[in-house]
Length: 370
Image (cartoon, rainbow, N blue to C red):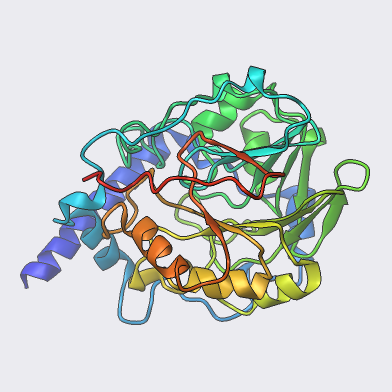
């Protein structure tokens, strides 16, 4: 009875909060696809019964769980280590002092990355507002994890968005980047949000799974499948979630967004691999959503099926989205890596990773932080 009352209370609070947000902050919600954009979506083989579908049957919550119960466990978790007690160590790289000939990656925490390749910049899923939610007071970033702002970034040749969840498509950051972005590439329907926020349709390219575009001479970007879902409000799966494969003359990269484990990793590896570096999510996992996020040990299964030569594990170290200790993903990653033959890189937030240097080493920077 007590649990039922708590779940009912949580449902009421959620409904009131969502209603208030929609009433007073509708812009954050974005916009649903319509017109020609919607017609193109309806012609996608992955859009059925009014929404996008995963390649395999994928419930958002595992069979023994439900949405309200899962939210309640996250909100009321008594594990005090779901957030670090002190500021995390980060590096503030000065972009103006990096040579245009240096090919690099910089991680901004969670699933946000900046790449420079052959002098061109690519920004992936930037969330630099200090929170990952529709409200600024909800789900604040960990202490010390925001050394960069949207204003501090260089001009961006290509902005890549994997899907429209708040921890990947951040309204405030996207607004501040407007005018600094040359071109946007995203999944079907996601461009509706950006147009609603003032981006020109002329710079937005939307892709379905397995569609490719040429970015530069001998550069090909392909949208590849993921196992996840989408939505910024009540409606779900009206826009497409995806991962990316970037092939350039000197690099072949897998740029993964959120995804549970499925046979698409093997497909991507066989069709587009091997990969010099694979960005794979590993963090904020929970058995309740085991179909839409990787569980810790699955990262190495996915990496092998991708035929990745080296991996970076993201989706951790910036936001509390689950109930495990904040550093557990990194600890389990490192321990499991000792049994694998795939190198793992572990840069701090903001630390430069030279894509041409295979000898670089990184510290276990999370050790000793409570």
